[in-house]
Amino acid sequence: MKKILSAFAILAFLSISFTACKKEKTKTASERIIGTWQASNMVYNDHNNGADHIISSNDFHATYEFRTDGSVHVNIDGELDSSNYTIIGENKLMITDDETYDIKTLDDHSLVLYAKEADGSDYVEVTITFKR
Image 1 (cartoon, helix red, strand yellow):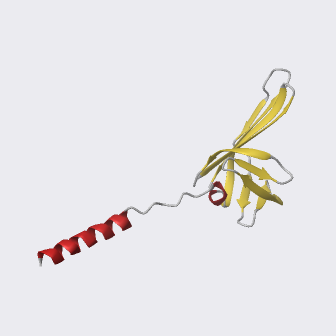
Image 2 (tube, one colour; image 1 turned 120 degrees about the horizontal axis):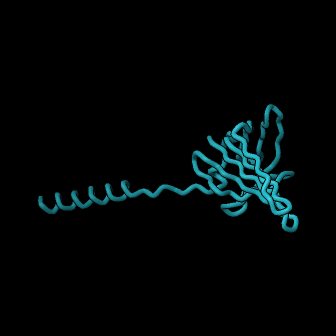
Image 3 (tube, helix red, strand yellow; image 1 turned 180 degrees about the vertical axis):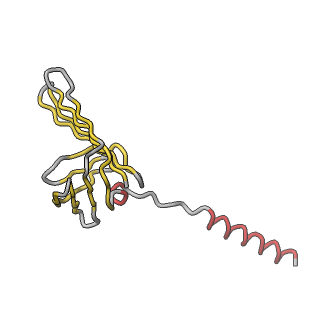
C-alpha cells in the first residue's frame, strides 16, 4: 500500500509541476502591433542651421489600425488612408508610402515610433507615442 501511495504522490507532484510551469509564448513585434492605436503625443524637430525647432503636440488626433493582413488603416483628423506595413526584425516598422520608423517601445499598451531624416548637418526627426 505504501508503494501505491508513494507512486501516486510522485505522479501528483509531476503533474502539478508540469502544469504550473507553463512558459508563456513571447509575442513577436508583428503580433504585438496588431490592433488599434490612438496617437497621444507627437514631437517634431526640424533641426537646421545648428538649432532645434521643436513642435510638440498632445492634440494630435490620429488612429492607426494595424491588421493581420499587413495593412494599416489611418484616420488623421477625419481623413482616412490605408497602406501596407512590414515589421523588420523586432525594432523597425516600414509603412509603404510613408517612413521607416524605429520601434522604441511596443507592449500591450504603448507604442513609440521614431524617425529621422538627415541632410548634412540638418535633420528632421519625429517621435509619435500611441496608446491602446
